[in-house]
Image (cartoon, rainbow, N blue to C red):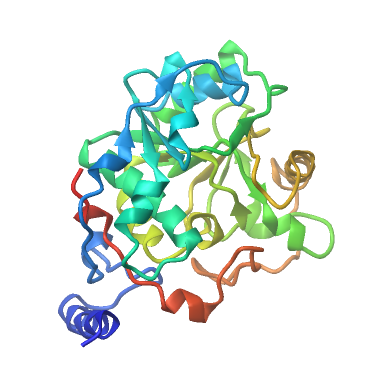
Length: 323
């Protein structure tokens, strides 16, 4: 019997035992981690290393300080030997080596985007095992906008928000409003309305379904760990996983951009400025189409997968990794 057939059989048995499963395979009243039969992995302990410290022209003082306010920091990298981090992250930062993660999953049918996504799952699973209340995840192609400067009051507001985890699942330091790139007409898609939460530097999207791409820099709260780890094993991090969560807080204007993207950093700035103008604060919602539920049809990404390709991906278990 093939692995896929075995998973299908186990899924039928498990479904009969636990009852109806939601859009992401999550059963009411149960941890998402036990609602899918997972393939185990050999240990990936060597993927985690302590980085060198040193100056970098990638991170602004504002970005460095916001990230340092997380309880733990994970930097996802490929050429990890070339990565250095600020001294303000000392004793709370680990590199997550993508090449070593690739070695762990090389026997499974995963494309580049799912392997990269699995690095996020491994990092957050590591954080959950150690009981961190929140963590920052930074991809190695994140670059700061040095023109965005926080005041002391702004930092105090951010610290206050971190102490209120019931108000947020994620805080995005960088984000790409793909919903505006594909929208027709003016105004803000209703699912993307973003209201101020604590101070003028952050706003929150209350529901799920707003198509915000980019996973270059964000914080995630402990209350979202289980669902996030589970969904990362079924989708692509910034194509359909992050979009499925509610209580999404955006740092506004954003302080992080992606270097390796199909649009320039200037275009990213223009898009986030358009989002601020159309979607942040009060005002009438537009009549643009609303995504249908937690797994609504999102606009296809330039690197996205079609449904057939997604079904061929083996489901992997971040908890099966030995840290």
